[in-house]
Image (cartoon, rainbow over all chains, first blue to last red; front, top):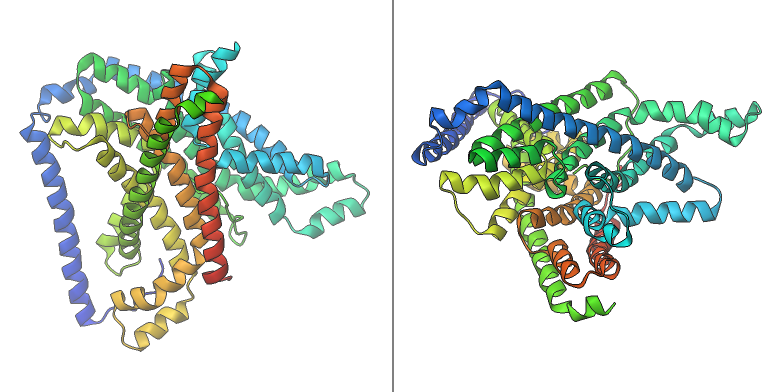
Amino acid sequence: MSNLLFDEPGPCARRRIRIATVAGTVAVLALLALAVRQFAANGQLDAARWQPYATWPMWRYLLSGLWSTALAAVVSAALAMAAGLALALGRLSRRRWVRLPAAAYVEAVRTIPALLLVYVVLFALPRYGLDLPLFWKLVVPLAVSNAAAFAEIFRAGILSVERGQGEAGLAVGLTQGQTMRMIVLPQAARRVLPSIVSQSVGLLKDTSLGFVVSYAELLYSGKVLATYNGLLIQTYIVVALIYLVVNASLSKLARVLEARRPGVRPPRRRFARV
Amino acid sequence: MSAVLDHLPEFWEGLLVTLQLTAASFAGAAAVGLVITAMRVSPVGVLRAIGTAYVETFQNLPLLVLLVLAVFGLPEIGIKAGLLTTAVVVIALYEAAYIAEALRSGVNAVSAGQGEAARALGLSFGQSLRHVVLPQALRTVIQPLGNVFIALTMNTSLAAAVGVVDLTAAANRVNLAEAQPIPIFVGAGLAYALIAACAGFVTGRLERRLGMVR
């Protein structure tokens, strides 16, 4: 915890802290009470409207949606990481005709919304005779857009390995490729692991675009369910809670990985994780 | 090409909506993010916990889920607002978590001596935050904030998925009418790239003029 802005509180400060504690608690409780009142006033709190979410078939349906989400996330993460590694190596290449296209790809994709890519795959590619199956309509745009983010993570990781490591590899007679593969990359991979995990959380969040593609992942399953049983707000709250639990666990994992290596600062990121 | 030129008004309308969404939600996100940051560095345990819970919640929920929940769910409990307003509020609340996280890393980068000096002069928590710590913190996070702004611009396109007719939705509509995907989607992509390039240019200028290297 940072104590940049305050010291050990004296009696006066302690009183103010107590007042702020009470005020903060009251504000949160008031907000909760208001929410409950709104739910109750519109009859959304009736047991009958929440009962279905205590039954197994409902959960089986939502969990199968979660499974599809996981499948899409894992496949697009694998594709994006492979492409990202290639792009990172390309951007660090000594050959200009490799370096420039890789840099152009990363910079261009960074400024195109994922939804626009989804629309391209949904509506543009079929016109040119490329009508992908539903699963790939979601996975391909996600892989394309996340490859750029992974590329920047890998590049920062490779650059964060001390120069002496690569020089030592060359000095004992390894080729450029061998040095990269056997000496630099293993160290870089270990350093970027937390960033990789949290970027994967971002990717998992992006799979909710299945809502647009009508691929039956978690959010789209929720939509189908809500149109079927008419329990709009209940369904979407349950869906949101599932996302929250899964992603918070993954974020926690990223923090644990980060804390396990004291002393090594993770490389600075250029992409906002959003 | 003519597909784009014939529908310039639609693109223009969409671009305006995208710019509105971007500007309004960035302003809202900056305000909320600042408050959350102040809560997270305050000496009050409850406020710190609220700030952390806020950031954790919004960083771990997909924006599209929040948009769907707000647009289709909230009317069920009697909260009705215009589509654009709802989208702006949701995007602002969502991005506030990222801005708060960026600002907090900036506050943590300010050396402890600065805070101690401010307190030695007798400044209160709010005063030392406002006059000493935040000005220095902001200078170290210009680049991260610029990245959040670009990501926010890209994220505004998700509003198209819940029915806001922004640039992405306009491109999609024009394409459904004209069936000439390449010029239309490339045009829309270029417009987004242009916004991002402007943001990058401005943050680059700000960084050079105000930035602090640590």
